[in-house]
Image (cartoon, rainbow, N blue to C red; front, side, top):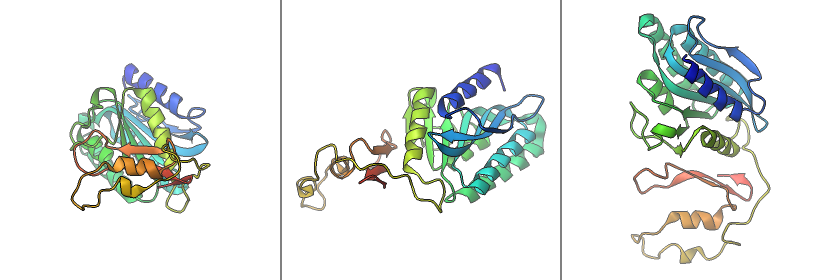
Length: 250
């Protein structure tokens, strides 16, 4: 891992985690660590973090596998952070095999704990597939234009910088349960931004083919300030995201 990459990942994790990493699983290969894996907390909620940068050797990818295993064992959300990570050519088939095990482990984790990917720089090769397996993708800085290199466009939440990306991760986690056996966080209910729910018939046209802005309907129903739209800058006629209704996540 280059000095710049190490500093970038370090600053991002220091700004995201409440008190820094609580338990470090390791820092990857001794001859050039490209991975930082640790557990910690985000606003009091336990998470597992795996941050990757530079060329990944087989030992680095195996460390990522340990992070995924820890998330599965503890039932804590998994946060992956990516900054220019790619397989190390010298490791040949060893790193390819380890990467296959990592992708399989992340696929099995789907629907068990939330997986949030944060892209801080260019993503190529198998790391792009790992990003695509995440439930929510936050993309910062130079690649915050809606496309992750090597994959189809999939930036759920673009951010203008690393601090904004960390804030978005906090927002996402606030809507999600720790795992598939837990309830999502519930906050004190707030009235909708527009005041008490009014006449929705005035927002939805009577004619079934007439167009309207579904965001206005969501704003009429959701708690004030508790709507987080995903993929807002992407083309298409479907609006998706998180919202809170009477303090409950939806």
